[in-house]
Each structure stands twice: as structure tokens, then as C-alpha cells.
Length: 157
Figure 1 (cartoon, rainbow, N blue to C red):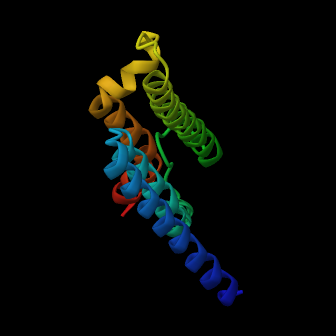
Figure 2: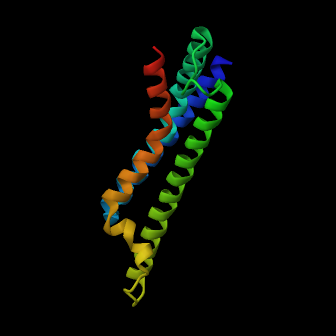
């Protein structure tokens, strides 16, 4: 079992290194403003499954050991976990939407360069023009899941 985890970890590191190399090449080649944000997203999404299950298990074990409620006194542990799961799902979906929006924006920009038309819909150009704002939103969405559990862990300790 440990060998499988080790092989899986090596493959994830290799995939992450591949994405970083391709992302750096694409950024240098075309100066795409979304690439650093997308690489940060890929990094956090790849790294967080390595430590998040241990953190979640620790929080849940602490809650059952101390007989405290996870979020508020009026909620059971199951209700708290359902609420946390729903919030995590919302942030995950918003993060994926922002990734797709970044990619569509860059594809639309590349298309506009290859054709004679320079006019693009405003919705397609927002991530390119405001890459820092959209990128920060993306990082907030992807960091929300670990931060929820880190916050719960710090309040339970």
C-alpha cells in the first residue's frame, strides 16, 4: 500500500513539474497573464490532497474525543460536516468556473490575433484585462477548502 502511495506521489510531482515547465514556456512565449494564476491553482490542487485528509481526520477525531460540536452548539457533527461540504463544493465550482473563464479568455485573445477582427465580447476579455483580480478570486476559491479545515483545526486544538 505504501508503495502505491509513493508511486502516486511521484507521478503527481512529475505531472506538476510538467505543468510548471509548459506554463513557464507558454508565459515566456506569449506573455499570457493567466498562466501564473493557473499554475498556482494547479499547485494548490495537486498539493492539498497530500495533507488535507490527515487534517480532516485530526479535526473529526478531536471533535469526537472532546464531545464538542464542530461549528456551533446547535448543530450535530453530521450537520456541520454537511454544511462544510456544501461550502467547499461552492468554492470548488467557482474555482473551476474561473479556470475555464481564464482559458476561454486566452483562446479568444489568440483567435483575435489570428484573424482580422480585434473586437471580442467584453465577457471574454475581462480575465485578460483584470487578470490580477480574477487570479486572486481563483486563489481564494482554491485555498478556501484547506483554510476551512485549518481554521477548524486551530479552534479545536
